[in-house]
Length: 269
Ligand SMILES: Nc1ncnc2c1ncn2[C@@H]1O[C@H](COP(=O)(O)OP(=O)(O)OP(=O)(O)O)[C@@H](O)[C@H]1O
Image 1 (cartoon, protein in one colour):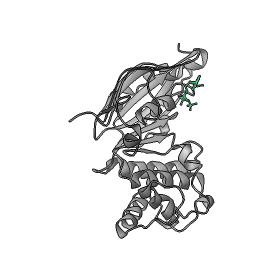
Image 2: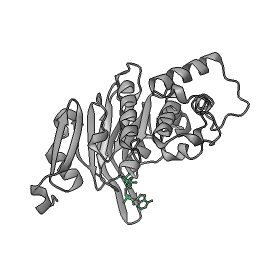
Image 3: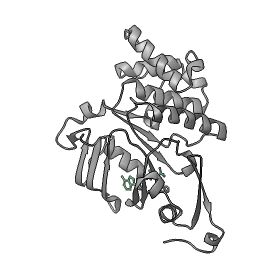
């Protein structure tokens, strides 16, 4: 089976700055990846490449079987789900949660006069159930908490049945309870047989949901390590990613990290 996407020696250059340097990364169907890295490491730039909203300055990117630069990216983008702030900010505050999810079927933000059939409604209700937001279906988007909004955005992104779902820092700004609710939803999604390929960007190992299979770690636009989560995410690789000596814990499929006592006196370069 061809990969969901494959990047080969991808670099992104902007005046005076190398945002990504020779990134090679292949992701297959059924895999769930987390991308870890400090602020400014290049994670969002990488998401823009695989979301077909940015072209590499050099190297090759094949996304869902199409080579960037040779295809109509608008077609390609309809096959990719995104949950970034760009969508979040454009949902009308008075839109009901159900409409905010369902209107994705027509590619619109804000329900107007489109006709929705029973299938759209059933699908929206099913996805809201999986993400634990059924009780919010008739609430207006503007009244939701940050965590509830994040789950609504994921539901909306799933509505079009994407082949690839990009979750850009879904845990950012959430309190402990909201983060745990979000992780529970992502664990359900991750375990589902018909889930799209998932790629989640995060700053924190505590946000890695159970069921995620692989990790890619970035520092200063370069890949520090990548591969199956259990083998690749180690105190050493995480320390090199964040530039400090860290202790890493794993318990029942969930990770924790903190600076080691030894590391307070030493920085990793
Ligand atoms: N157009 C641009 N010109 C110059 N530098 C840029 C440009 N776009 C992004 N950068 C820089 O490239 C680096 C990588 O940015 P990017 O947004 O990909 O990082 P990130 O890992 O997503 O960071 P964060 O975790 O803070 O969101 C940052 O230092 C950013 O300031």
